Image (cartoon, rainbow, N blue to C red):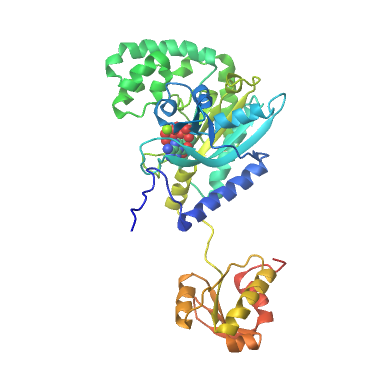
Length: 428
Ligand code: ATP
Ligand code: MG
């Protein structure tokens, strides 16, 4: 035998038992986003490396150490580590931003070369939502209300919303000086990453996950004290709108977000049900990014939810997921029955479009087929022998509960199944 090929670290095979949870999340999210007027985009997984360097910024974990980058035909290409940069690139490339407003979303995989652990993977998936051309704060509030509704629809509880404002780039410059001054005094307590960031982008230090750094970070000056009047007002109206809509939040003046391009509103939803990978959704306003990537200056805001973590949370909280089991398992005993069986199955599918019917293919003994019928999780078996096939009847047997079995005309099966399974009739 040849050697088996190992899966890649941090990349998951989602098998059937989990896939139904993913389907639930995607279905609910797509429907809800559509209801708020957001339209779906599907974009390449690969972009020029320069896009992410320019958008996300040096001195970020992503650009410094997490990108999957390779050369092809002399170009440096990178698997997208997040969605916003590619969406902005696409909006510019397709001329979507000239005096226009757009609300869009994208669902798909992202790639970051992180150390894999529960809730942290190298290929992970995001639901990413962006609105272009809106100054806010109404859109800021609506985006957050939309997420709150997403949690409600999925049955998710135990989440908390944290909010902050990062002000304008001008306000941040002033703050930056105060930060540098503080961290210079405490330089001996900084780790190597943070020392490097001190010269480049000191705000990134606040985002450090190193436990040994948390004390010195806790003593750092706050951006709140340097907010400009416009940002302050923007933030106040956002908070009022959320309160008016009954969405609770906590202002966290230390929330800075990992990416470089944010301005004003930033927020993060966390949960206490998943251990240390506790951030399930984060976002914010990035009014400067479009221009920074060569487009016309356009206000913009968005958020991204980590789907693996949301799925884990749904499972942890015992939320609902769609069932995959067939309603009916078709057992066919004998040659004539096997020939008639597939046609019968098609007639049932025509009559009942919602029917999940699994036919036993490949034949085998009656006993073996029944074993498979049981294992399938179906509620009913339809049993067709040569004799029944010749008379256009079949046996309908309950596989759960009483196990009752009755002979009935094949023509009556749709009505009987529709009633027992609560299915609508119609054309399949
Ligand atoms: P974290 O603080 O957990 O590293 P982040 O700030 O890097 O998250 P973002 O870049 O804002 O995360 O991405 C948005 C969401 O995507 C996160 O809130 C999280 O749910 C999810 N996410 C980010 N990185 C990963 C990963 N490596 N594996 C799984 N989910 C992830
Ligand atoms: Mg991260």
